[in-house]
Length: 251
Image (cartoon, rainbow, N blue to C red):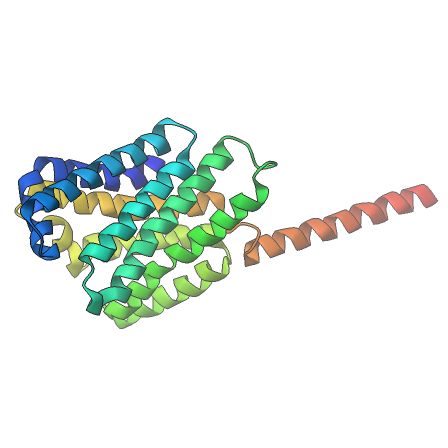
């Protein structure tokens, strides 16, 4: 799933490299600066993202890679945000952050370092789960359909609380496919004259799917309803075993 998440950043790099003159010029116009600075910023952004991708996928320093991506994202938002749509961009970027946090948690889980990074792991799961929940807020704000808004609100509550997190993460993937592919939002994927741009939007869809699939694999973590239920079950199981042992000893 990590490749699903990173495909979006790879396509960002590819699009910027292939269309460097256009991207640099557009950024210079938005920032109202000389065109040379727009090209300089584009090169800086590309190199930063490439370095982050290498650190995340090619080394064990994924935390450094994620930090680089977040720095790049913050700089990008400061320069290019439409401030009247600030909260939309905030929730949209939260999706990326959530996927990256879950990616870090998955890396820790794969390396079987849970004993060493137990607290960090559960913090990442909590942060990733809450950040991914911003997707439902965006859907509710869109007001696509009444039924879909109700479903989105239900998913928001269950994922935010971490109740049957794995199940509702899978259901979110289905809802995501419906929203981005089968509803009237399909034009965001297919309705571009630029093939690379269409592929980039597909990679963004894969990034979202990858984030929720990782959540479905990792679960809600300690700070969730599922985690509380698991701890309670283990506690009752220990009490039951203690009673059995005590009864056998008395006999």
